[in-house]
Length: 495
Ligand code: AMP
Ligand code: ZN
Image 1 (tube, protein in one colour):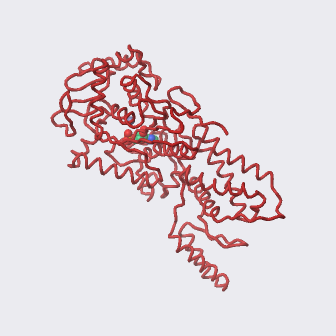
Image 2 (cartoon, rainbow, N blue to C red):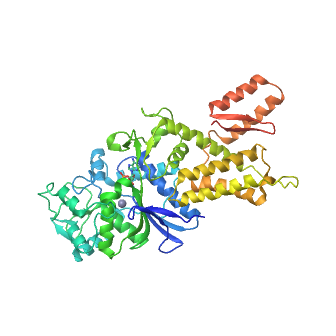
Image 3 (cartoon, protein in one colour):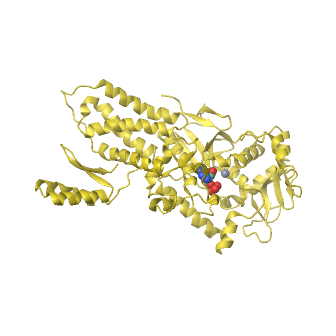
């Protein structure tokens, strides 16, 4: 088997994955700023890391997955000036900031559960880690890497670089270029240098989210939150840090600078970034007005949607592309994904019913056995190649072909041998449900569908053909079909 390799944004290449303290893996993913409903673009990023979490667990690692909730300090415009995103919503809606936080945290959890994402091992909030953040600010000041100015504290980038730091190494930006770009922008600033970023901000009188500190009432900088929460639960150096591509600069660049400043160590071994979900080539984003809320997707109620799509269809659609490529939303691609997902889930239904029957007369089919073994291996090899879910799914479809042959009696279990048959059966379920997280979505209450099928069998026996047609119509209305085969009558999702 190929060893697991992951693309590291820092080295710009795929690297063999070697955890610092195998079999334990520490993984941190930047969570949402909870001031708004989660859109489908956000889901893509969290799905990428859910898949990585699932796969690492599947291959035997013990993963501590930390994903935070940003509930303070992320300012409108993503910079160091402006209103707090949550404080602003609280004012607009005349609610407590923590009511805003709770509302959108609940939505975030509901949405991710709907898409069958596993919860992280720890989900810390920024407001719950004020003590750690104030301590970190003090340490950076003591080390001469940060300075106070009018009650705010800034990280000193020139000092950091003069002391051997390399601000820009993650995003590939050159400090001199950055300095030239920003030189004229910020003449009045309380910063020594326009590139310096806030690790603590002074709260103006109208700012509602505020905490006492040695520098007066204020609140923590967005970048510092992630540094404090990740190192608290995963240590000064940990294995994987993930997030969307748009967080690479400045958010993650600043995390590297802070981590090095605080502990003299590079905080993260593998930096991973998921690419954007786009609509007509443009990043899906709330502010551009091209975003879908999951609810709109499930009901089809958005001008860009030609029909409703189920959560698992969308999950399948996203997994069909590699996480480092952009993925463009399209109705055609989603309709194709719906077909693909239904084919897979039909396989999932039937594979569970297959049983091994020894048969002395059955011919051992070496060619088919080899193809199944290659596909079982291929599934892992694809995921080991920087989590290539697209190729993994192609291998799963090869396995599906054999599942269907067994189901249709075109292949006898004994032709594969008991061991390989068992492996095909258990791996097909395990890969689909546990690694890719694709579950069956019952189109109707199963008992009712099964009951209708019993009626169908009876009507057929009694040759009541108009009744037979009525039952068929009912199934069609539910997006189901009746499979009238020689050896059995069954139902399936319409593909
Ligand atoms: P935010 O709450 O805006 O900080 O976003 C939460 C996560 O979603 C971050 O990791 C973003 O990088 C990610 N994200 C935002 N928009 C998109 C998009 N269109 N496609 C993929 N990921 C996105
Ligand atoms: Zn973060």
